[in-house]
Image (cartoon, rainbow over all chains, first blue to last red; front, side, top):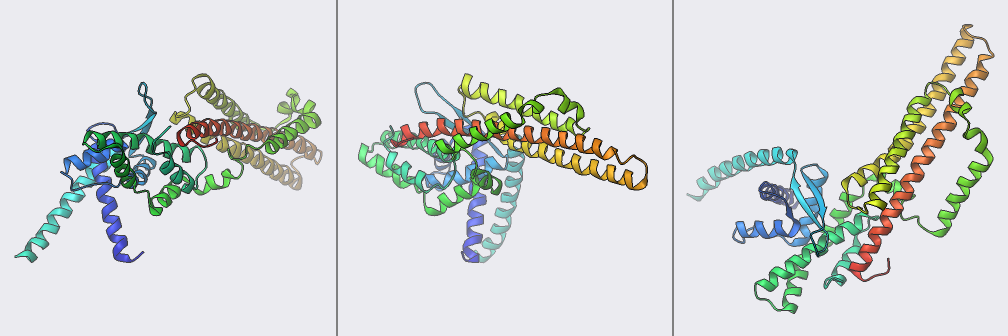
Length: 115
Length: 247
């Protein structure tokens, strides 16, 4: 993988993780609910290919930022629901600060170039 | 039966993971796909178009599958997999049963006497602690798996992961005890502090400790093997229904 593609993937991955953590801050969700809500709240700007969601969710779960619980709603298939942990909330707070800082500095430079 | 059985089966075949990880990933996807299909239908697509849209959206590329495999298969697990729930063939179970029977028949009487514990060194204390912990965890796993039939509890995973650790810890304590007592004994004899006949006391104590530690290790390992196999069978059966394959 080229260096630029790796950096692009890292940025992409960081963005996706922040989006997932932010949506889960409002309450537990299933995988598809997460993808749907991110798409709706961003008016279609962020759209997940559904399969790409799972490595991210499982990675965050493994890192202790999410907790996955299996539930069995009446008459339907068992489902896995993700909940933000206390550690996840702290990480989300850090990510929010990092992204705010990124956007501010990015805008300072791009804004200047755009004049 | 899932309308996406063939797509899920393809993914399951590509996921080079042991059970129950493979089944759990596929089951999670299956539930979400049904939701996605319902959403596409709600948006006005017909059955065929909704199915196509969902399968395209699944987007489980080689990269995605590789990431899932890398996430769920740490090195220790790869080592344990050689002896784990995959080893459910009749021959392997027969061999294990024969090994246990031989051990009990040949070494039986001394193993079940209180004398063995009384003769052991102080290092037998942590070993017995590990043994008690393994039995308690085994009882809890049996209750959760067979009585409550709850095979998705995180406590089940935690309990299963603890058993190999207890087996290793027991063996470590027994080995450490053997070496420490040997050092003390030989050093004492060399310095003239203790009688050379104390070497027999050391041999008796250390070998008793080592025997107990090996028994505890074996018990913890067999418990882990049995419960991992049972869990794997349950989840394979569930996946078979979902993917319309043989378990």
